[in-house]
Image: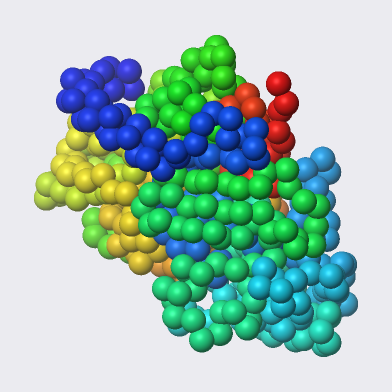
Amino acid sequence: MGVHSTIASHLKIRHGTHVALLALGVALASASFPLTHAAAETSVARIALSGGLDRLDPTMSANGTDLVIMSQIYETLLEIDPQTGQLTPKLAESYSAKSPTVWEIKLRRDVKFQDGTPMTAADVKFTLERILDRSLASAHYSQLTSIAEVRAIDDYTVEIETAAPDPVLMRRMQPIGGSGRVFIASKAHFEGLSPEEASNQPMGTGPYRLESWQKGASLTLVRNEDYWGAKPEIEKGVFTFIPENATRVNALLQGEVDVIQRLPIADVERVKQSQNAHVVASPNGLVHTLLVDSTKAPFDDIDVRKAFAHALDVEDMVDGLLGEYGRALGVPLGPNVLQYDESIESYAYDPELSESLLKGKAPIKLETFTSDGRYVNDRDFYQVINAQLGEVGFDISSQTLEWGRFINMMQNRSGGPFYIIGWDFGEGDASKINSFLESSSALSVTNDAEYDRLVALAGQEIDEAKRTEIWKQVQQYVHDQYYVAAVWQASSIYGFSKTLDWTANFGENLALSEFKLVRQ
């Protein structure tokens, strides 16, 4: 069944729900933002995100909406130059490799946390050791397992020693790419806080600080007037959460918000033609992975995983739902990744093969969860996926969950037998896939010793050509094992009020400090 006919079969069912959600969402947006359209001109930006928050603890969360907020409050030691792709200093003054296994980082001396205390090497050491505390099950742990010891040499010098050479460790010290990021936290602030308090009381060195948080409704950031760096133009950012696509778009066009995340492709031209809004886009959007949990039945059986993957017409799905703003991929990496193997193609659509693989097996019933509005056209993707799975014999029962709850379940390995999750490959390295495939990761859907062995070899290889070759072996192995049933990349598309402008250098990294006021 083609994607267009599959979606059409759901329209009648969805219509009543859509109208109710639209009315509810507009009411919420209006209640959350009692500001006029002139708000942007007084340097207040009202931003509607597509999903809710989970927790604002930089050690614990790699959730995309959490990162949008946390990256305004917290900062990293390094950053990426958008023009060259090179690492440059941020909270660090410089960094260097003292040996193949020792990195030395010199810190800036003029940085203070938002409570006025200076940032020192003790805070960097505390941050890294907190991520590496296995009892906390940090979402960033799997990306930093090479670290053997962190030493504070003096107040402004840190040494990081790795158990073996780790040529990409410094790529974790910048903010682009989601899991594996090291946002520097205050030792004095965090010590003694409970996990809930750490989430509810974020405090970093960044250009914005938390003013208020109404759980499930809105969150307000205000400019840090004592910020060590350049002062942003925007004084205040008011964030709300509108997962329903139509509601989010209408809120923008009616002037109730100034920025929306995840502008639906179907509404791009409508926004372009409007008098009060415009489109900001980047092709470097999230790489969406359809993960199957191979650690549990039924997907611990490779034949079931294979039947699942070949039941899906991914090319047609992406063409119908994303058009020019999307592309199907053969491996769970962004094409910008250095080690990306373009020779591996998407699984072929072969429902007859799927049916034959499932013949003789008991009916496979899958109780699943879905998101709605977190990713571009995610509800429609789930509907097409579930319909095509049903055609070959899977019995799917799905329930839509609020994103914050859903991502928390994924991190507890209870997100269901399969689900879509998007990944930012802005750092340009293949090791990101360890976040969802390495056995030790909190988000892993596998427990595969051979995968773990291969990626350990890749992680220690200094020679770039040899390292790339190992990562290509990893990609082929993952493909052959059917751990990721489908992969596609969607452009990052935002709707902006014409009173604001921004360049989306890194796709998913919505940087409030880079917004510019447009004087009309």
